[in-house]
Length: 234
Ligand code: C5P
Image 1 (cartoon, rainbow, N blue to C red):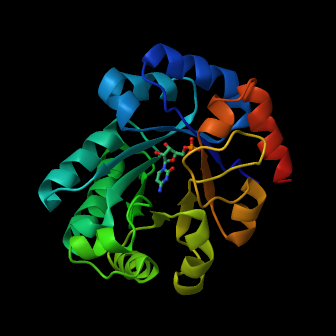
Image 2: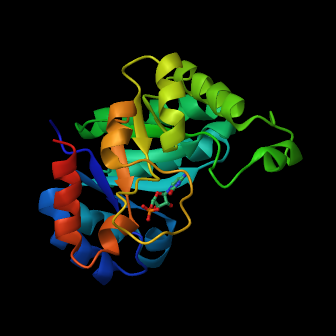
């Protein structure tokens, strides 16, 4: 079985990110580079994490006109990332442009196309927040609607919360990869994640990849924390 643990490098500097990556690399499957680190350290941090041999998930959640998103995806593919995110609310044309760009850029480079993951409804959005922007007020319905649109538009994967995995597995083709944050082992201190599952529960529910941040990087021994999560999946 491949290692499904993606560690979120949610730290503010390249030095901290590389130190953490080196510490936990043997126990994890990939690293997620998000807005905080990318804006601080630039594309160079992607190259430096890739240079360790680790896979990279570039979580910048692109949302723009199709041409701009296609070009951003091409730039990400040239950085040799293995996964990246776009907002499904950018619409079908934007999603198709992103997927096409991922495939065409990789083909030109002779590499494997990065997995373009669709983000549906941010977990910070609740029913009143969705109504406010003119969307279906039922969060679950809006998630399912955007997930179906993403699949129709050719995306091969989605980001979803732990509590959405089961419902999405019922309606999506089996080849769709689901990447799930909101993972908690019970060993860590309570924080802002409210709707969580354990790593094992999330995999049993149908997750393909687990994004884990604080339970690993804020642990006293990040390497041991990652190893213990991996063992819990065996
Ligand atoms: O520290 P923690 O395990 O909560 O980190 C989870 C990671 O997944 C963070 O990088 C966070 O931004 C991201 N994420 C999330 N919930 C979402 C989408 C992304 O926690 N709905």
